[in-house]
Length: 275
View (tube, rainbow, N blue to C red):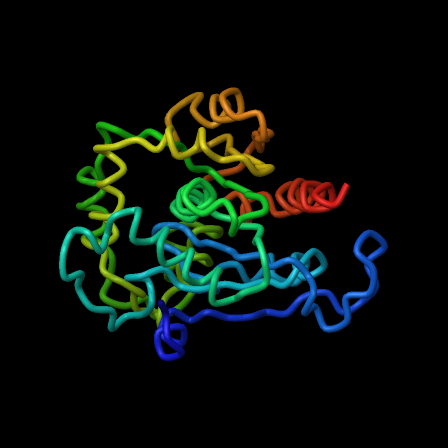
C-alpha cells in the first residue's frame, strides 16, 4: 500500500470538484460527495498534461491526476526487474490509488497506455470502477515493437530550451503536450524504459480483460489512430457496455487535437451516468 511519501512521489493531485448545486445529484458543497474522476496519462505523458481538461471535468466529479511509475521526473530511477514494467504492476498501483482516495467507485479517463490500465483495473477490481473513457488504445499490438522508433528517439536533444523548440520537433499539439510533461525541458523519464513498457504489448493481448469489463465505457478512436485498424470498433462489438466514437481529423492526442469534440462526447457520457 502507498504511504504518504509514496503518494507525494507520484504527484497525486486532488483538483477538487463541483462547488455548486447539480440538478441531478443535489447540493455538492465542496465536492467531497462527488464521484471521483481519475485521469490516466499515456506512455510518454504525465498527470499534468491533462490541465486543459481538468477545469470542465470538475463539474462532473472530484478530479485526480498522478504520474505513473517511471514517469515521475528527470531523476527517475531504473526498474529493478522486468516485472516492475508489467501491465499488472501499473494496474495494481492504480487500484491502490483508488483505495487511498477512498471516495467510492471512480470514473477512469485514460489516454493510450492509461486507457489500457483503466480497463484492466475495471476487470480486476470491478468494485473500484464506475465507468471508463478510453482514448486511442486497442487490446492487441502483438508483433509490433518500438524498434523502428529508436533512431528518432536518439535524435532528441538532452534538453529542450523552450516550448517552441518542442513544437518545432513534434508539431503544435504533441510539442505542447511533451513540453508540459518535461522537467524544465528535460525528459521526465527514460525512453528505453518506456519502450520496454510498450514492448510488452507486442507479445500479449488484452482482449480477455476487455471482455470482463462490466461498466459503461466510452471508446474514442482518432481518425489518425496509432491502433491496429478496426480494433477499437471491434471492442464495442464484443462488449455490450461500450459505445464507440471516431473523431474525424484527430490524431492520437484526441483530447488536445479535437478538444471540443472530445469534451462534448465526454460530458454527454458523464451526464448520462446518473440517468
